[in-house]
Length: 294
Ligand code: NAD
Image 1 (tube, helix red, strand yellow):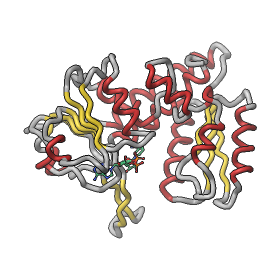
Image 2 (cartoon, helix red, strand yellow):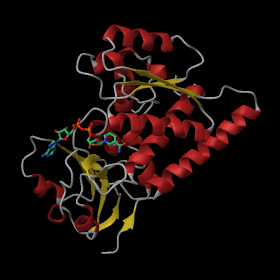
Image 3 (cartoon, helix red, strand yellow):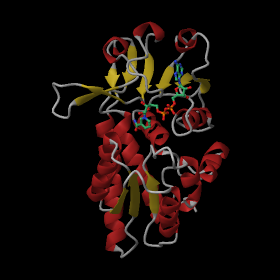
């Protein structure tokens, strides 16, 4: 089957161009230029890459960005104090704290300390609760990026069977809520699968749309996918690869070459969901600066 690639670069470029145009208008009117602060703790290679990409994208759209870095041995108390300082700084609109954090720091405590108004990652219980209730909120960036992709490629979701694999708070769970909401995209019948799901293949074979976020390289194989399905691959696993300049290559949760042949639409890794995630984060920051949610 001839499949169409869901191009994350194209979608994210579209979104970033729209945001940049809006920032220009705000600047021309003398309005508040959006300002994103990012905190990075430790020296995890993937986290450094993610944060640097976020900061670079801020520059691209004309946002102000502030990157705050700490050694892995910073105490929880010190980190929470910084979060509170940023909460009280009216020049900063949005704050993200890059995960994972070192084991001695409670991610949940950090997230709950960020003011919901500045939680542009959409991880705070208030923002997650608002998402569940269909109220205006900052939808967490990765699920929002997937929804943008479905919307901009005009992929029908109404009445479709959508199987979400993975139930994390930042991807799988919000994804399942968004896809079942009475909206477009949305209105799908959703099955949420996880590590205790029995006979996953029986379920995925009935899916019109599969959204997979589990973090196991090339887990979804062609025998698990129905002909004509839409497959969205959120997974990112770094594999050591001496032939690459970076020393690694990225793999998704989908065995792309064999699965793509059966799909109507599929996202690549890299070049898929990851790029739309950053664009969504910047959308949320713009909303925060414009006080659209709170
Ligand atoms: P997580 O580890 O928190 O959750 C994984 C989920 O997979 C769990 O809910 C678990 O129940 C489920 N799972 C594990 N084994 C399973 C199995 N055999 N069958 C069915 N379900 C199973 O992961 P996460 O934070 O949601 O991230 C998932 C992947 O997405 C990772 O590779 C991560 O790097 C990637 N990710 C990508 C982006 C992006 O911007 N593209 C953003 C966030 C996460």
